[in-house]
Length: 328
Image (cartoon, rainbow, N blue to C red):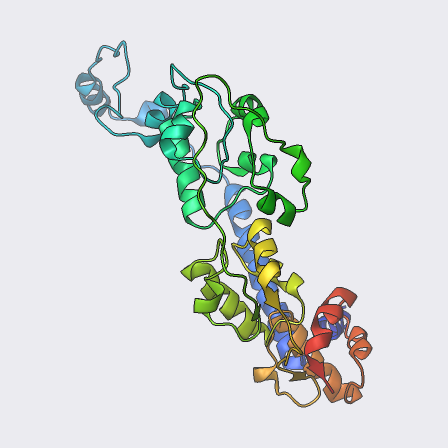
């Protein structure tokens, strides 16, 4: 039975005979370590005769016990501490003299948000979002702001007016926001120019400075895009931007407006000649690389991407993702 299990481990993981034996020994040690606490709990319990206890020792213990009156109210551990959550809750109530008027969420100031009934902390959060390049392309984008109350959005939604150029880029209908006359006593919202010179760049050659020209891209995100590109060996599709940690759908769509892939030159990986130590790729896990080397040593070189499906630990989705980076 041991030999059958030993052979099954070798076939599944692509291990050598020595590696398979070491794996089985390690698994046996782990199982023993897991069962040891349960075996310890099953040992016979030691019983003690309470009558054998020293009466003088018990008397000294009882004499040292004092009953303290219970506190009627528990002490406030947070007294005197500045708790941000409590401070935010104090500001959640809308301004007492809130008034509604048509506004553009991409241009109004923090004070104007407060005039609409938003607490100051939420108005400042929207300001920080816009300062980092965030844009509201349709009315529902306002609900993407963290902690934006649903009832506040329902109250403000009829008064939201978006710039037609921004709405058109998002695929919306400009007629969803027809111009309306301002309410009596309401001041017209300030219109600020937001146009930028159109530009394009090759995603496989752009540096961090060029990437930061895109709305929503800062130093950290631009560095992550470059690192992901270098690890992959180049992008072959703009859809691979979804694999960059921290990029949301709005920023990805903004990149798509400017980025192109002109004849991408990808770094190729030869699965027939690359040694195991260098057979590395984000789409290729460690045990997959080991299995590829073991398979080609036993059965010869691969001739097409579909041949990798003969390796048991590699599935069709992995082959599909790897194909643009493979050579034979």
